[in-house]
Image 1 (cartoon, rainbow, N blue to C red):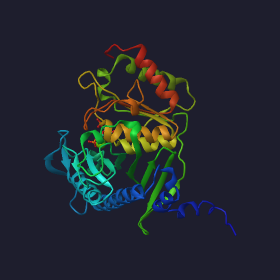
Image 2: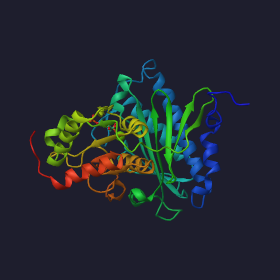
Image 3: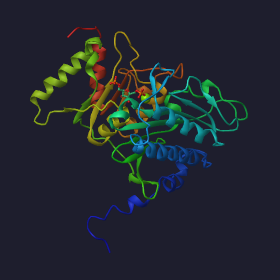
Image 4: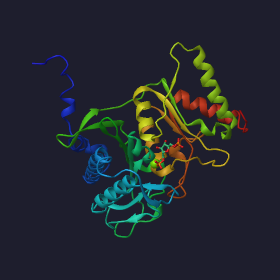
Length: 345
Ligand code: AHM
Ligand code: MG
């Protein structure tokens, strides 16, 4: 018996844990370690989701009164999310070390662990106090140092192509968790009553055409001339389109990327004359989000080369970031390559 409107119900009955167990063979030499690490990340996400929903009533909004390694004011919830994930992961025997956007140095945990985890525990945290969605971003590498000794920075600096898993959690109207192990992008929604992430996107592919563009152009006059021309071309192109592209910019990378993955759109956070490396972090944002976008059929670059091929020299390295459908990102590269002079508009 199958009633209309209920066709996809069976899809929603697959839990994140079951989905990973069923696909263990995707993961070379799978030992169950990956599923245990992802279970800790998803548990952290459930707890962060719980605290975010209660933040304004529980006195969890606002700044903590400390600055982090990035020189930014730490929000109470930044601190809470960072502590939660670190506590959970450092007890996991498979985790050799953790690097977090909020921590100055790497944290070496279990010397016998096989993996290291990188985290942006609460991305877009300047949005917390105004009720706008925020996210968590994570990625996972097999360590290159031998098991049995303390982890080292080189375990974290292997480059984007060495990631073995990456994903994000979006704390929005629902709490969503999307991840990849290089076999496409799989997405889950938190069912709060059951406390389980249930499958909603078995294989997410982004539309090849953009409906949106997302960038903060407050520093447009400091962008490379080619990029300024690209923006002008976008506006000109809009004049002749029957369905012009719309601007959507949340200011939370995870939210901007998630919308563009579902609806089609280009995101950029370029460098400026004063800050050529831009704002976003290569290891905590560029690599994991870049891999997700690639796996969803899009393209991710630093404007010129694929973001996953940009070498990592230090854990808090920044990078310009361009994400979206292949056609749009190739166009941006062409504008940047053929017109590099800084131009005042
Ligand atoms: P954060 O990691 O300190 O929260 O900063 C990263 C966030 C991204 O989520 C977002 O894309 C960007 O900063 C927004 O920056 P801006 O306010 O300069 O547009
Ligand atoms: Mg961030």
